Image 1: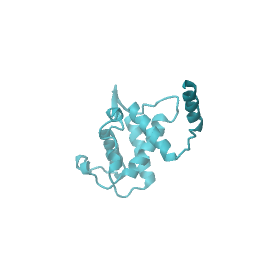
Image 2: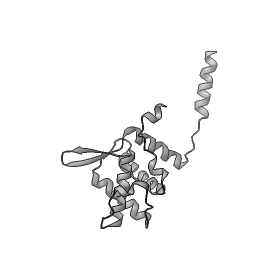
Image 3: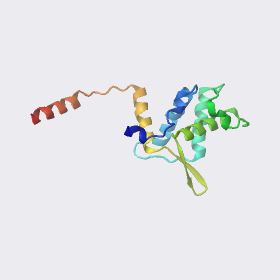
Image 4: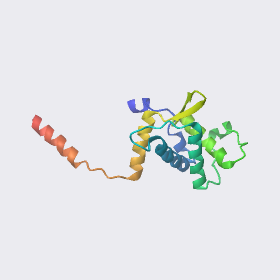
Length: 149
């Protein structure tokens, strides 16, 4: 299927684990960071993205990150628990393909690949349960089909 050829293989991995609600909150916040103003796409610095993730984790008052399979890859010797969890979440999102890093001189910028961003936008629309009225579109298609007869 062409859809899954355009998305990273591990994209849904963060949602398959015990911390899925944490990743949902983080990606919702990052969507605002990357696409907050519809006219521009932001390429924030690595530190900005990490700070946003830390704010989400702090606001959720996360006491215990449920260890995931590959958490052993990430050292737990961080002094600040919130910073440690933010670093783990950032690493998981990067590994899954939700975010990528680009070097710009001495700065590291973070991007969300366009197809991934579009998928996230669609998922957030579904989450908001906006009602769409398809009656007009269906009627237009029907009228076009009847004219062809």
